[in-house]
Amino acid sequence: MSEIQVSLTLPSGFRLQDILAFHRRDGERLAEQVDEDGLRKGLLWRGQPACLDFRFSPGQARLALAVDGEAGGAAAEALAKMGRRMLGLNQPVERFEREYAAHPQLGPLIAARAGLRVPQTATPFEALAWAITGQQISVAAAVTLRRRMLLLCDCRHSSGLLCHPDPARLAVLSADQLGESGFSRAKSRALLALSQAAASGELPLDDWLEGVPAAAISETLLALPGIGPWTVSYALLRGFGWLDGSLHGDVAVRNALQRVWGAQERPSQAEAEAWLAPFSPWRALVGAHLWALLQAGGF
Image (tube, rainbow, N blue to C red; front, side):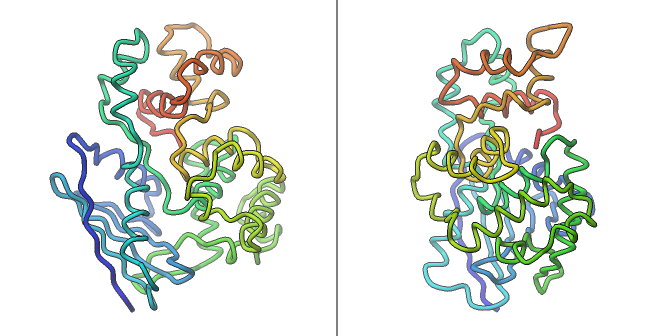
C-alpha cells in the first residue's frame, strides 16, 4: 500500500456543504462516506483500488490517497489536479457572478448562493456513467441503479469502500447482467458501448482533460448509441468542468425556471433553451443555480 498527501488552498467563501451534499447522495454509504469535516471516496487510481480522503479546515483542503498498491510516478501532482477538479476550483465563478449580479432574474439566485461551484466527479468516465444511469429517471432512482452497478462490479478498497469501476471493469459485463441490476436495454447498450470504447483507447477520456475543445468531445460522444445532448452536456459539466452546456432538457432546470418566471406551467424545452442561450458561455452554471433553487442538487 502507498499513500500520497497534498493540500489545496480554498477561496474565500468556499461552499463546503455543496461538495458534501453531492457525495452524500447515497445514504447507504457504500462508496462515499461523508462526515462533518470531510469525506472518503472509493475509486480506482491507475487501475488499483484506492480511498481518497478529503479533510477541510478554513481556507484549506487536505487530501490523502491510500492506494492498494503502488501509486506510480508524479502521483502528488496528479492527485492535486484531481482534487482541484472535484472541488470545482478551476471554475471561474467570480467572473460569472460579477457579470450577472444585476440581472433581474439571475441576480437574486447568485446573491443567495454566492460562490456556487459545480462539484465534479473523480474522472470523466464516472460522470458519463452517472449521466447515462440518470437518463429520464429521478435522482433517487439513479442512485439506486448506480449502487447496484458498483455492487455488480464489486471492486473494493482494503478499507471496505466500493470503488467506481473503470472502463475495463465495466466493459466485461454483459447486457443481461446490467439488466438484472435494473438497467434498461438502452442504458445497458450505452454503458457497454462507452466502456468498451474507452477501454480500447478509442475514447481517451482522461487525455481529453488536457484542453481538448468541448465541441470535439461532444461530437465524438454523440456518435455513441444512447448518448444524446443532455447526457453530453451533463457529462461535460460534471466530468470536464465545461460550464456552457445547455441543460434545457433537464426537468429540474425547467421546474426551477417555472418558479423564477412565476409561470403557471413548466416551460417547454424550446422556451428553456431560448432563455438560457444569452448566458453562453455560462449556461450550465446557470443550470446549477437553478438546481440549487430547488434544493435538490440536481444530478
